[in-house]
Length: 447
Ligand code: GLN
Image (cartoon, rainbow, N blue to C red):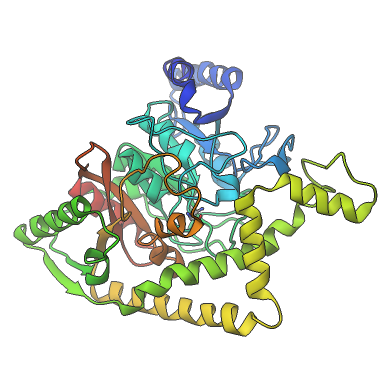
């Protein structure tokens, strides 16, 4: 804990942490020393964990990095976080992110931007940018982020670490400040597959507080990392030949596929013409869900309330106008538009149908093949300001991460070399729903 606290202090300019629980972390570490001496420590004893600023932790502030939640103190603890604490993990602090998880660069935060520790002129990715940099820069052992459309995998790729998004419903969402409820997952950043698998096996599983959480049994992923079979791997031609793809990322992805082939695995090219609809489908459905989820922030119940109101209606309007950033307002507007009576069928219903097609395609493909391999992102970490004036260019960063999110299947990003400017490249692997054990074992084999 002392080691990490020191690093947090010397790397404070990276702006990964918005709160450091110094006192409680040190106390917990002392208690743990005694527990360990008595042989009574939990499975995560000694693991120091940072949590994204969208996860409630009782008695601590949680803002979703938004002005609208300024001053809000959590009344309860996120189930996933509680399960880690119950196994003696030490929660060291709260991590910066894009407001309500909306963004791909962490430039969109009420706490200010987070710097990529490898090149401070570049973004760390988003929305879980603080969580990624915290692990990248050795400010904690592992961190929790959330992945709605890529927010764990993309920043993991940009910072050169491992980022895992579980199957939708594998981990309880209780305590997570909702962005798009049918997409939201809690994911893990780590430097090793083993740490990631260990945290996942503890976090996953049914929770009576989240009726959508799965009752399927959770396997001891960290004990199932041995891998010695030949598998079938698909790669989607539309991802590898995408014009948006940076050439070095294409090269590195292809060379992994070649290597796997040489090792005796079956590697096959497949086509997925619907892929180009994954991104619009994602942005229609998530903005619709966000517009509904964010309606609770009205100045009455939580956080910020405008000081400028003259009646109830102006209190609602001004609180929301002043409390939400441009990007969040853009998404609320988009979401209310696609849900409006005249456009509901044209956009929302249509997108739901396309979602089903994409999900069916992905699941069928993953019934024939053990894994799908693709790049995590079309580019490596870009410079600050490069996309911030152009929301569509920013949304395009999610081109390859949204397929797993729209389909609900698990996906992991692993480091896969660097580009010419020395920025890390991410390799993404998808497996079928609830195949976390297989995904971790294969990742362990590849890394
Ligand atoms: N960049 C995507 C978005 O802005 C993904 C965010 C996420 O996964 N939370 O919606």
